[in-house]
Image (tube, rainbow over all chains, first blue to last red):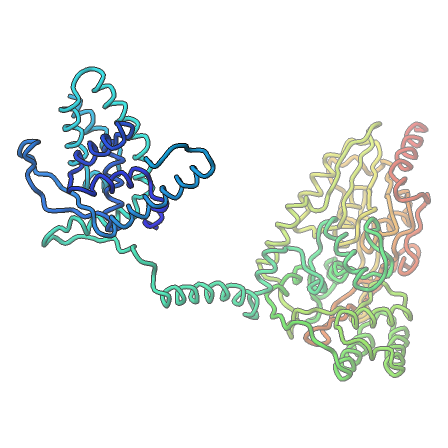
Length: 116
Length: 519
């Protein structure tokens, strides 16, 4: 039943996976990354963010890393999250699915132009 | 301030979520609030938060179950005893199967216990269905008019005769209540000695409800032979006319010898067959063999207080079968009752009914649906029509060689009906005690009978046990009217004014009006 939660992968979860692709982040960091990578279109609220994180943790697509100090944000200790290899695989397959969709859209002349 | 508001809003989330992520959510809010200063950014922040709440709170509640499962694992309480919810996996297959089996066994046990434990079923049946079913009929209680009609329908169909639903009784049908009512006839009055062991009061009736059920028995030749022998023995010993008893015995034996009975393996059908064979000879409509799927006890049951209580309750429920007590136009009293119930139980009802009609100018007794009952009640009601004790009927009992007289009671103080015209409405289904009421009054010229010739059952019956499943109702007495010196057995009671039963009331009203005008 938790599997079903991520199938299909909700866009919030996909964005979180993508945001964690380069580095480990805490909740607020994820939120900011997601906002950046979507040009501010998706600003994850705390409820959505942490329920997605919870689900991804349960399915072991991300994991918690040790609490560490965030220098930029003062001395508060935060929980950081890291993409697992399963999570990376999931993100890749989702990206491929979208790429396939994109190809179809192009063949159907719904989307013009070259690869973005 | 705004942080406090958000902290308060966080309480909307399920506790599991708050415990796991509440602090971080608040932290995230703090981070954003710190970074997004100014009116527009904070407005956007709050819009985001509200939208987020609207979306994620219901979602969290939907997923509260998995959260429940995992939260304790996430936050173990070191060293402290605590409860854990272990619902992450389905129960083992074995456990499910075992649970299923136990439920199934319990479920099956209920009907099995109800139907298979011998003494239980009739009790249950009697609770579910107060009126006796077909196979319990031989010992049925007297019952209210609608029930009696149902009973008759069953009876006619069981005996293979056709009867419309509207005709409550066909001549030739024995009603179980006749057995009772007429055995009561033998009990009626004070001069008759105590009934013999075989004789039963009507109240005996429902005791069959606690008898064992054997199910249907397939009859073989030997069993049929025993039933026939038993019937013959009872006929010879008790039947009111010894000569006719002998003829019936011969007929039964002849039918048996010629193989007429060979096909019958069903108890009820065999009982009906014997009944027809006997009636072909005697034309006695009170006579009959009755089959009972319920085992009848060796000794006739003694009426229990429960039986009496049930009879009282039945009678209270249907107002002692007094269906209508009315004062019709021109001050005609109209009384419709469908039975002559036991006086000890129903005297107050009857007295109240008669009191209501004490000032009428004429009285109409509607017996068109009345199938008899207690001769003592016949005498009690007739009492209101006479200013002195009047000899109504005699009952000769062959077995005891006694004759019981039936008289009206001393006049009722305050009764004004003694000199008022009286009419009795009859139909082809007016039977037994109801016929006696009409016949007695007709002979005494105290009432005008209006309607149809009655069914013609005069002989009181007592029931005798042949074996576990067969009873025979044997008329063992006959009424002898003090005036006519005979009775209405087989012939019915001829009305004074012959009209269709449906028109009887209208006719009687007209007759009464005419008579009153002449006065």
